[in-house]
Image (cartoon, rainbow, N blue to C red; front, side):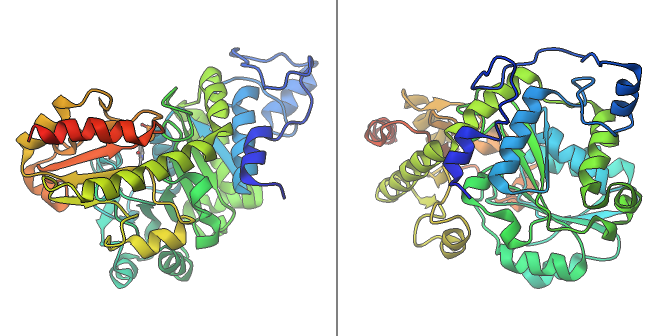
Length: 410
Ligand SMILES: *Cc1c(COP(=O)(O)O)cnc(C)c1O
């Protein structure tokens, strides 16, 4: 098989474009005409592969899905309107009232809010465990567990779990291991190798090519036998190994309507082509900056899995191909120091979002986690003196100059 970047650039081109366009055009259309009544009937019955309506499928979106499938060797890929759409659609298809999801408190804030506040009242139980303690994880799983869910690198704690251990627990208990791989993408993390059943990803981040658009994907790696999950047994009888993707495409995703717009799929495919180059650069910059910040006397602590003193250094090295991601955090004396530093920066922008081409800085406690109580923030390791830096692809020396200017004000 060709290399990752070659596949990312060439995609699954089948040469079928009527004009021979080298890039799949943006099919900005709601519906598609069929040759005959029988054709449209067969398309609706799923007996003939054809696009009918863009909420359900669209050629530009399919091109993006096929590129992701080619890159990951996955069983199937579904692209959606956002990372949150990917997570909510997946959970709605595998979970149900009376079922539980075993996860960590170290979760993207909106994911935590989805589990607890949106789906809790519908009967989903969320069980929190420490993902770095496999015994605790195993003990929380029971016959009503429908997923073991965690993030590849948690944000902003930057915790990395042992995926070999978690994959083994998931296999033993016959529950799907679901990992949000937004921070690493399939370029750094070969999910299937670690027993991950499903990857959910916000393609808004690295994949979009520099924060061009919002998007997400559900990737069925092919690891899990969907006959084992009660909620998907009927779909497995109908669609075999494609049960998860069929249940999404022909029911949950179709009914919820969070489809990816064709124009955004085009932007995301474009971003996918340069994914490896941008990740390499941003990870190199992040490692360089982490070491640089670690030497600054006004910084209390730098958290980055790439630093040898990080408790997650070895696991990150083994699991993410020697790269450590583009996000680091550091602690200053207090909240005011964080604000002063941030307000002094010129090149580095104050913004939410991660894995942009531009370096972005944020104070998580007062923004992403502002709706959580002080006690909840404490449990989530989001302290008031913490700053998050999402490192871009700029010339790293320029970033250092900017940060030194900010530190000089403290
Ligand atoms: C941003 C993000 C999401 C949500 O993705 P959207 O595209 O913003 O909906 C989910 N998980 C992680 C880890 C993220 O960083």
